Image (cartoon, rainbow, N blue to C red; front, top):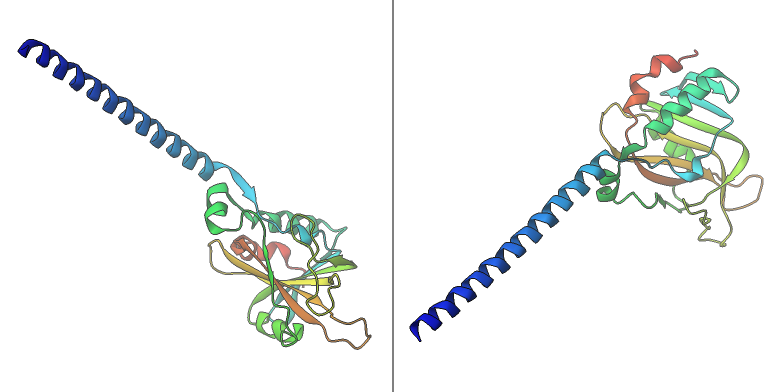
Length: 214
């Protein structure tokens, strides 16, 4: 009897040890898989450039209230700037995921108190950019869904987009402003809507001399 009990206890101990080993190996496998996912996520690049921006017909860079550089879409400096501009939205999949900006950008600010001219006054404290569109652009999300007016449910269009160039080298919320009108009247006030996405515009600041035309 004692030998039988000893054998049973030994078998139970072996089974328990084997079970613990399997659990440990499974946990190790999960940890390794997680590490691989993190490494891949940190290396895989994504571009968060908002779909609604499109290709403007003219780019103007201001230094406060003075024009610093200006070029149309048929000029070499335009192509250079637009390529550099697209790069400011480049980041890793992991950073985009944890920043909450992987899916879409944020549109906000429908208000009759947010007038475009007031926004421009704030932008004039440093370098900022204007994208000018020859044809009205419809305000949409990345999936093509139109952003509607809260006043009459109509689609909103814009022909200008503005954003500041940062002197800080980091990925932050970039606020881009588009001028919209909530009325078709000729004398209707132009208001501002804010489009926010993660970006690092320091590379544009670092290359400002390349864009100078004045």
